[in-house]
Length: 257
Image 1 (cartoon, helix red, strand yellow):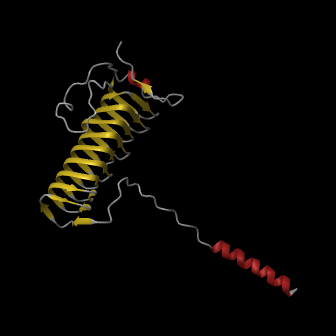
Image 2 (image 1 turned 90 degrees about the horizontal axis):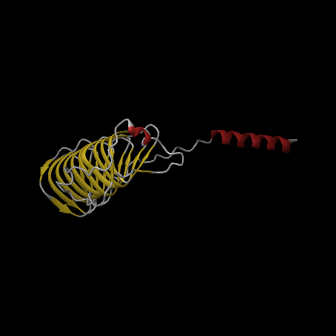
Image 3 (image 1 turned 30 degrees about the vertical axis):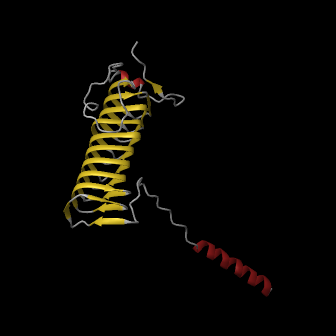
C-alpha cells in the first residue's frame, strides 16, 4: 500500500511541475532591412553640430547635426532626431532622422520616422518614411506601408507599392501595387500587377527601352522629358488594370496600334 501511495504522489507532483512550467517568450523579429551597425563604428553624438567632410572605413552613426560630404566603406546610419545635409557614398544608408542631399549606395532604407529630400541612386531602395525627390534604383524599389513618396521620377526594374506614391513611375519589368497601396501620376511600365484594394490614378504607358534609359545615375533631362506617348488611359478605364487576374497573372500594357 505504501508503494502505490508514493507512486500517486509522484505523478501528482509531476503534473504540478508541468503546469507551472513557463511558456516560451515570443521571439522579437526586427523589421529593419538594413541593420544598425555595431562593429567598427564611428559616432557623432546627438549634442554635436559638425560641418566637415568625412572619408574612411567601417561604419558611421550620426546622432547630431552634420553638414558636409561623407564617403564610408560600410553603413551610414542617421538616427531618429538627427539631421544630415550633404552627400553620402556608402555600401548602405539607413535614415531614421532627416536627410537632405544626394545618396549613392548599394542599399538605401528610409524607416517610418525618416525624412528624405533629394536624390537617391542605388541598387535596392526601401522607402518607409516621407520622401521628396528622385529615386533611381538598378534592381528594385519598395514603398512600404508607412511610405509616402512625392517624386518627379521613381525608376527601377521592379517597383512595389504598399504605401503611397505621387509622381512619375518608370518600371522596366514590373509595377506591383498591393492592397492599400496607391499610385497617382504618370506610369510607364512593361507589366502591372494589382491587388484588390490597390489604387491607380493617372496615365499608363508601355515601357520603351529605346526611349527610357535605366541608368541609375542622375540625369537632369531624364527626369523632365515627356514620356513617349503610346497608350493613354483615363481614370475610368483604370479599373480594368486595378483588378487582380483570376490566375494572378501580370497584365501587359498594350502598345498603340
